[in-house]
Image 1: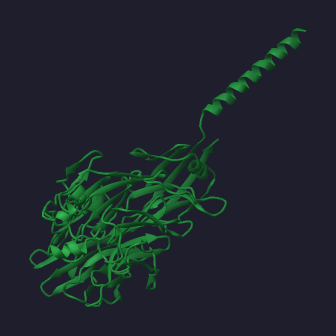
Image 2: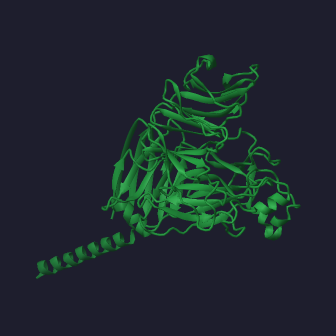
Length: 512
């Protein structure tokens, strides 16, 4: 009898322990952990591209990570900002939109991402042109850096014309040559610069590596003369071993690592301008004026992608300009002049979706090409002076920062009465923070050799951390978490293009 009683008590205790363990497990939320170990290799200016993509059972993309390769009008994007995204295919997107305080009194501003901070500066022609940095609550002057500087390996590269500095020391010095240096780009172990002056307007591909001590021999660099004396570079891009430079008169020039070739000849009296380039899957996309469409370079030729993006209903299809591009939330975004249209290309459906218009005025019309043509003419301004530009698209933290401008960044004047009502003028030169769940990004702290990133996801939160360094957090939905947890990881491919590093290992562990 005692044995039976003892066994019964033991069974009850066992059941209680199992029930307690089950209760604890139910209280502990499911989680996912991923570890990325990547060796980016020697820094030769390459785009680092995609680390991985995650697909569901239907082959739809539900997540991924990589480094954006983009150049928007005034400078190159931060190629060391690692983006991590989760998405639920087919679900409508609802943006949280927050206007930031103004960074300038001018009517336009351009953005950059440097040292993990958002930078803003008015364009040439403005009067309030201080370089400003966002500290999460206000704009503060950035007096330490040259606008649109970039990192190469462990030092800063910047142009102080007619010199290029690396770590504060000149690596290219054309002082005394009566020339200037503009629009630089480092890729494929070459420093690309436009050099201009009396009788000179050329693009040079100067061999250079961060490890070398000798200055660049400019005379020995392969060069291509620009076709027109007033031609200048609007954007650069790269695909494989090819680097492209595009200009304000429609010239598209390619350097293949050894020699230059003009892929698209500029024509003086025909508008054809390329304001932006971005790597997207296996192509290099170019944003063009006057179609407002994207063109693609596949390694052989430049082709027009008709009606991509399309035209917002209610406005003219003339004189359109795809000025800015970005990847955010795993999709491609394009900002289009002259009505500041923000378009999104869904990477699963391959359909263009209209995100929003970045101005609230004037009412849409197709009776004229640009906003406020009549008012501009009456003031003696050029016809399109008060058109609407999207000048910056910067993925930072969990958000996409969007900046606006008139045609130029010249200051607003109260005599422009048609913009006084309801402070309409304040929408020119404004920065907005757009946020969706499922996106987080982190500025990589450079180191030679392997770098480890850690990803943690719960049903409502996504965390990205560099081992031994900083971390960033974003909110996600339960549906996003479930898609991430059950999806299949495919390494070295995705929306950011081909992996451009040296070594990569991605591991995924799920706790139910």
